[in-house]
Image 1 (cartoon, one colour):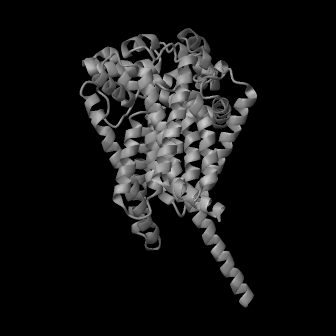
Image 2: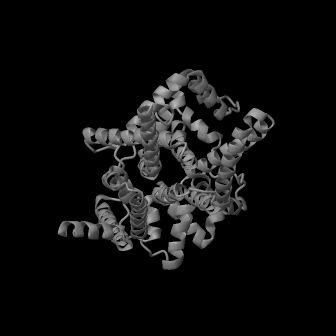
Length: 474
C-alpha cells in the first residue's frame, strides 16, 4: 500500500506545475554553471569583466564583434554610417537589437558575456522545460528524458550554446523556432490564433538567423504554389476534392508565412530607409557571394581563410579550367550565380559527392570547433556523436513519414525547418554550428510527433483486432 501511495504521490508531483518550475530552475542552474566553466576555457579573448566597448575591440572581425558593433551603432545613432552597412547586409539584426536594449538600460559598462550567458541559460532551460511539459501530457516520458538528456550533454549544447556560441545568435533562433513547432503540435482544429502565433514566432526566429527567413520563403512559396494549383484543379471535376484539400493547406501556409513576413517587415523597411535593399531580401546574396565559390586556394590562403580551401571554393575545384579563366576576367562582366548553377548542372553527381563528404566532416565535428583542422576532440568521440545524431535524424524522418497524414501541417513545417536550415549549406560557407538546427530539430520532431504516432499505432491495432474478429466469425 505504501509503495502504491508513494507512486501516486510521485505521479501527482511530476504532473504538478511546481515540478515544472523545479525542473526549469535545475536546468537553469546547470546551464549557468556550464557557462561559468566556459568563461575559464576562453571566449575569443573576452572575459566576464569586459564591457561592451572593450569586448568589441577584443572580438575584432568575428561575427560576435559585428553584432556588438551593430548594437552600439543603434544606441549612438551611427547605424546609418557606411562603415556599418556590412553588418545590416550580412546578418539579421536580432542579437544586435537585444544587445542594444541591454546597453540602453545598463550602459556600455554592462558585461556582454554575463548578459548573454544568462540569456542563453534561460533559453536552454525554458525550451527544455516546454518540451518536457509537452511530452508529459502525451505519455512520452522515458524517451523524452533520454533525448533531452543526450541533447543537454552533447557538444551542441555543451560546446556551443553554453560555450563558444554564448555571444552568437543560434540560441535565440532555436528557441523561437522550437516554440513555433510546439504551437503547431497543439493545432488540432481550425484555430487561426495557432497559425498566427506560429507565424509570429517564425518571424522572430528569422531576426536571429538568416536561414529562418529561408524557412518563411519556403512556407510562402509552397502556400502560393498550392493555391494556384488548387485553382487549376477546380476546373476539372474529378480533381475537385483534391483541390479543396489543397485550398485548406495553402490557406494555412499563407497565414503562417504572411504573419512571419509581417513580423520581419518593420526591420526591412527601417533598414531600407538608408540602404537600397529589396524589402523582401533579408540579407545580401549578391554576385560577390557567388564569386567566392570560384576563388582559388591561393587567394583563400592570402585572404586568411585558407582553412576552408576546397570547401568554400568548391566550384573552383569542380571545374578548374573555368576557375582559371575567372582568375583573369580581362574586363568581362561575369554572372557568377549563373556560372555556379551551370557547373552544378554539368557535374551534379560530382557536386553531391564533394559536398556531402565535406558536410559529414562538419556534421560529426564537436560543437566547440567550427572547422575540422581545429578540432582537439578525440576522433572516436566525434564519430560516435555524429553517428548518434545521424541516427536521430533518420528516426525523425521516419516519424514524419509515419505521422504525415495525421499531423500534415506540423510535418510540413518541420520539413521546411529542416530543409531551410540545412540545404543552403550545400552552396555556401560551412561551419559545424550550421548543422546545430538540424540536430536539435530532429530531437524536437521525435518528441512533438510522438502523440500522433501513438494514435496511429492505436488505430492500426484496432483495425487489426477488428479484422481478426471478422475472420474468426467467418
